[in-house]
Image (cartoon, rainbow, N blue to C red; front, side, top):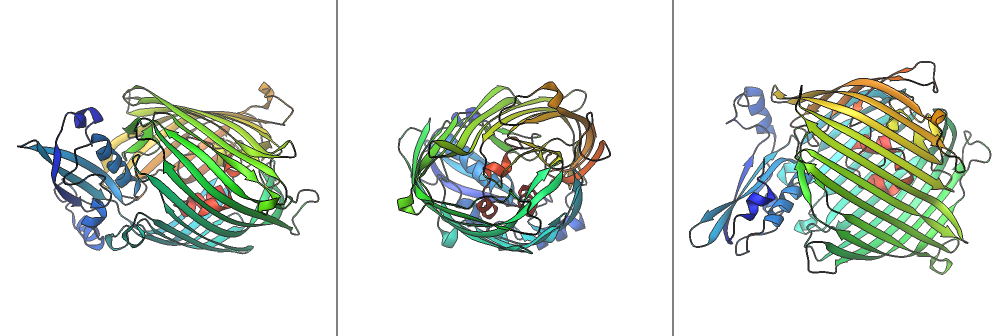
Length: 546
């Protein structure tokens, strides 16, 4: 929809006026979108207000035109969740000046939800109500009931991306489960652009939840985790150059994990309690090389990917003198790099390391790597080939953490949580075919064919050919074109080429989202802390990642 950076760069001048054009969910000027049902939907929906769009612009009257800031503002608008399309066009005028024309189109943000599905032998149910753009001001609230297996939760979540009109964001979450409640709040000021001078964050969370350990797709042991955390940090940009951007981070971290046994706790599996408290420091480097693509993880919705380098490292001492239960050092580092080979063809690679060091021994240590290839072609139908490779190796994971392979982590021919170990390897090859027409101006259709293989191993073992489990399958995709996320609903039928838990080699999956993540499918419960639920945008994501 937007011109390329090169096209933007051909325009120079000082900005004069800024005008906005804000389209409703349906555009009556488009053939087929002037039907009575769509007119009713437009009347019910409050269009994003002019000041909400303008506040995301990173340049205005009197500023010299910057194509990088325009593209960054487009990314921010698309990331809001209530803007389907965003375009900022410079319009040259006499005298060396130019005007900006900002055009946006809303998504449908009031979403009553009732969804049922199955994945890897587990059944789930989600129902509730969500509004992601209250009265056009960009604020969001949701109320959901969700259930997977015999686990359930009721939750309320509120998000204000511009608290009292400032750059601060507020997110609050309250959830009740049969085992306890979850409550937390996050106030932060993000780096809203590459040129932002500073950031801040304050998080508080108290989460009581039931955790489970798995073996052969069955819950081997259950226990209650009482998690509490307080985190505060500030960040600052330390260089003037935009390529690359360099930032530092300073903060404090407090986390307490207490575990209680239940009638379902197997002897010897209850994790030990932990308390971490201390200062943290970090460094971030970003090389901006953003590209816009469609038909990658979503369908017609524009997705933004950075094919430049992104590096981060953070850590610090968690000391008894600061309140920890013992002296430890923490470390987390990540490096991500992309390569664009041609239009619609690019690679994304990522490698990371995290863990703690206590008494000279590693704790909860994980090394991981991901490689993704995206390759678009148009014969015989528009399609995107996706190849995802992932490997993980752990040492002395915390007692509640596992590396898992199964239907819920990218191996669709097997039941959820089928295989566990200290090491995992996963390869997904998927051909995503698309019908580019928008059916009834409401949704897009597509299909997939896939092959997957993966393996687990113990700490002291390597991957042998006999350990790999493989599957093949076909799937159907539906993507609501006017929804907030633009994500896909999938129905997959997979056949396991090797034996696994369960009596059948056929597995049917019906649920939202792709079957595997671009990064970190099998290690997400190690990377994810309970406090992550506060920032996660959808009830389905929070349910799936627990």
